[in-house]
Image (cartoon, rainbow, N blue to C red; front, side):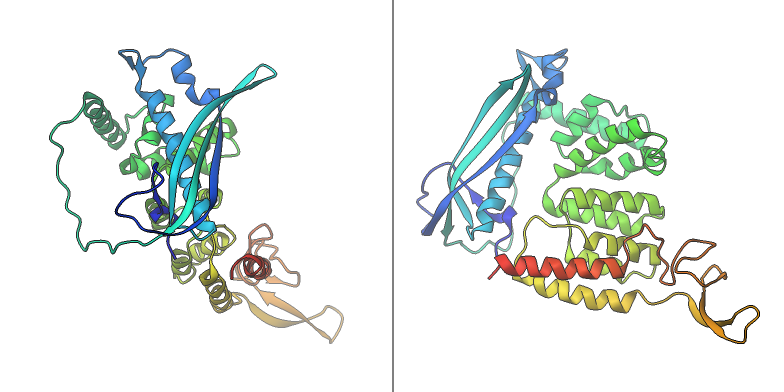
Length: 361
């Protein structure tokens, strides 16, 4: 089945080289954004050259691209592999003293005959380039240089630029800079919220393949459990569950990574098909094999009685008669009471399988 990101989107109703096999139905996408999204434009206009704001243009481009991605997903859900006649309009919505922008994308989902992709793609340099691209590249290089040398000022202008221009090169440097903010999020609540909103927006502007690879690879190599858990939260918010990467984490030799992988199982992906049903069934088997009892069950004599009572010895060496260890507060499987464990996740998987079956043939 076609991946949503591979769906062709064109503004015309037909193209000579494309044969339309079936017309499906109109599809649309709506994005509503507050005017504060363009605060740099309405505020100081600090980056205006010749009456234009490059930051404002980048924000508009970001909304435009998001609308196209959404309309691709909507077309994919009804079996289309192309959207024709794309039209995008932006309107201002006002009421009760507040204003918002609504961007609406409309097109027709169709099924086309797709040509085989060539084995190799050749790229050539442009014959000429505009000054805006030159200035943008200069700023990108400066940001990467400053981030590498720990001198980058993560102000609104910087976040706006790296969000709009997909500056993936500084991803690990951003995490390193905000390491303490993530770990101590409870004591840095306001700073954490501001960072989190910017960071999620930053990651969300990557293409789907980059988002998934960079987040899962970082989780695998990250030594701090709090950072790994935070990245799993980002995966959850952006619906970036990936079966293969999840399996890789569940089969990891590090128990912490296995727990993060289990946590990600509860995340969603942008769309599901019948292969997901089989994959979720396999996941249940892998989970049952992976998460075995880590403590040792024993029979313990009771005081003033010859009868024995069931108990267990935790990994921390403490003997317990209750579900959670009195020392490390983990159960016999190595999970704390607040953590998502196999007992909780398996019913969730079963429910998701049944829900997918109701929609997917």
